[in-house]
Length: 366
Ligand code: MUC
Ligand code: MG
Image 1 (cartoon, rainbow, N blue to C red):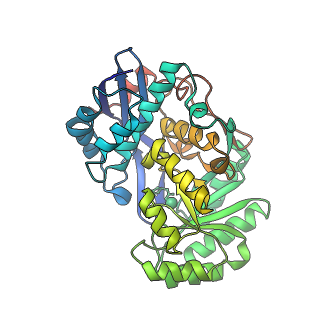
Image 2: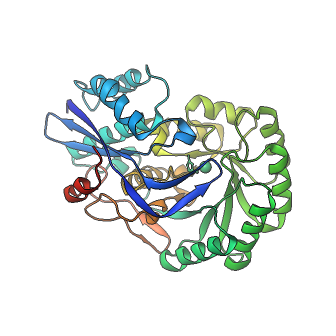
């Protein structure tokens, strides 16, 4: 069970349709595949998605920090020495997706070693999740056509709509077009990726009052401390903290500050170990959870659903598990499939997934 090597392999797979949102755009999945090797010949896998507009990481920085610092800290440890591993990784500030991928690859390796699924090791609550699909910026009719296609093809009936453009009427119009086309049965919520000021956000929420939005995520920046508190206290739409709550300490701050009422958990940034801490923290504080998406590929999505389905608290709402549908290809031997609006956890030891060597050879960029 001893870690003998950690690999960080950059790869690039284009998106069929780029995802556009207030803080950036994703045209290519230029992620990093992380492989943790043990002395038993086991290989655990996970992926790190660089999101410079959210965490400051790049594909190059992820490869560099793993190669120069984290691999050396992990090698020699047993897969069961998670606390030691995290104590070592935490000596380096930042780099959340690089740390998270190492954590999840270790869990995958542990599951494979024990011949048990990671989702059962984590909690084993259920074996699937309802899926929420993210709709990025585009002309109204394109956003509507995309949501209708996803509903008709995959049975998905929950949509997160990207907002945060100026003037706010652009997004109010898009959300109204979606509600009109999709009807009242579909769940709609919004994510601003810090694009608005608190007063713009308040105005937008007022203009959308009749649209039955269930959640509003990260409409303005975390540094708008009093503005966010003001906004959260005056709106009846629950406020989700996403990129402002990327560590347990930030989760505490956002919730106790009254700046958010719910927390988005993304395994891509907090792995399984820290995501579980945040989940239990939220349970203790009485704050609800949504399983978010870091614009994950299929490896990352397999991690999200394994975690989300493992716990009562994280499996209640539809999880954001469908961004991989926008990619032209992926690395898995058996692609993930969404049916009837649900994604099942992969059975089998570890994460239950395997990398196709031919695909990795085609897409790796090192
Ligand atoms: C999301 O929920 O915000 C876009 C930027 C990012 O960091 O994650 C995605 C989705
Ligand atoms: Mg978000």
